[in-house]
Length: 113
Length: 114
Image 1 (spheres, rainbow over the protein chains, first blue to last red):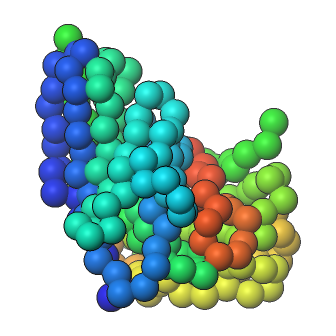
Image 2: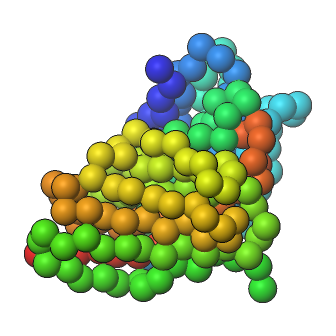
């Protein structure tokens, strides 16, 4: 069965510091990978996605993620965070040729001044 | 403006009552989804539909029902059989086919059952 693991439930960081949010997946078939962001009491918004090609993917708000097939990881990074990046971040995969998303449990990023 | 609307934003019900959550989209998407979000558990798929008049159970369908009579609408009914219905419910839609397309999410409905 496919699954997604987000290793950190909370990540506290000071403003302008770099951050990495970790995501690992398990699947015996090809997957597509996504990162979504959720601000308090709102729906989810796509940050970036990996379908194929270059393993380094750039998204909105200065975020990027790197697909590592050998380590089955898709970690999200930002070189310098802002207070407004405080939110919950979800990693998700879709199975090849299906539309079903499988989500991780989320990582709450808290940026302090 | 294209998007997904969910209403109401907050909903309160007494135990034993059925309640229907609304989801409407004007993105012309074929596929629609319902998720339940609980603290620390991420999003779990309740039901999804890839075409009008057809839908499939997700991972936690027990105690829920849906209909898809129109492309734009995918209402979710939380029945009295759902043992723990208090949660944040999110509706989403996407272009159907192959899993390469992002899902667009509505703002959610927070249901409280007492």
